[in-house]
Every structure is written in C-alpha cells, then in structure tokens.
Image (cartoon, rainbow, N blue to C red):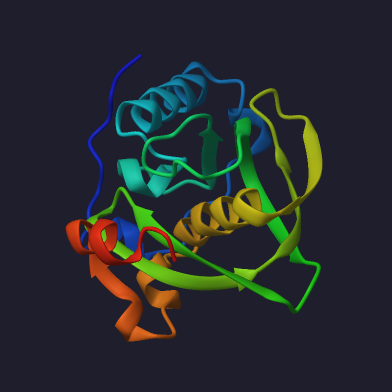
Length: 177
C-alpha cells in the first residue's frame, strides 16, 4: 500500500467528470491496489472520505470512513465504505448545513447546505451492488465525495460567501456553529 499525492485546487483532474469503472476491471490487481491506497491515503490525512480524482485517477471510485476523526470531532461514525460507480437519489428537499473542508482545498472551511437525506447505491470492491439510505454527516460526506466524480468541489456549493474561512479563523470563530 502507498500514500498517494493529493490533487489540489487548480489541478484539471478535479474539474472533469470521472470515467465509469467497467465491472470487469473491479477485481483487477490495479483497481484493488488503488482502493487500498485510497484508504491508506484517507487515513494518513485524516479525511472522512476520498475520491479517485483527488489522487489523480479520473475514475468513479470513492472511499469514506469516519471514526474519532480529529478534523470532525462531533461527527457521527461512518463505517469504511468503498463505492464504485456510485449514484445518489435525493429523498428530501430539506437542506442541512455544516462546515465542510476538503483535502484538495487545504486550509479552508465553508458552510455548505445539502439535501439531508439520500439513497446511495454503488458497487463494492467485490463488484456487488449495495444500497443505503443516509442522513446527517454520512449523507454530507457521501455527497461531497460523489461531487468530486462530477468535477465539483465544496466551494462550488457555497451560498453564503461570509461563511468561508481559513482553518485558523474557522477554529476560532465558527467551530461551534
């Protein structure tokens, strides 16, 4: 396993739609290695999730997990999830807001509102389809990571520019909001 280099804001790989993964390629050593490396990279940088474009691979693969994450101390736990070719169905028009950050946009946080409840389906690392209904922090992380697959970043979703902050100011003035 390896810790991969994170693509940062301005890198074109973050702004294009990632390619679908052919189901025959899921079991390949290259795909399994990519998944393992993404998980290790996410853990190394204390991310709650990571999308393949963030590690310079334009394929529709995301991983997420959050357990006692110091970047999101009040967040609920998310079990390790590998999702290939994920799809999201919004289940409510009610929006929930939270302060988001991103490994590809280091040093910034912004308050972003997203649908509060979604249905999420994908293939797992064995190529088997799964589906989950998610809400709260899990729904936010899933939507955030899947946005990467369509060339979107959390900063594209900011409605209120006054709720964009560098990390030290976020910690000082907004951590409890």
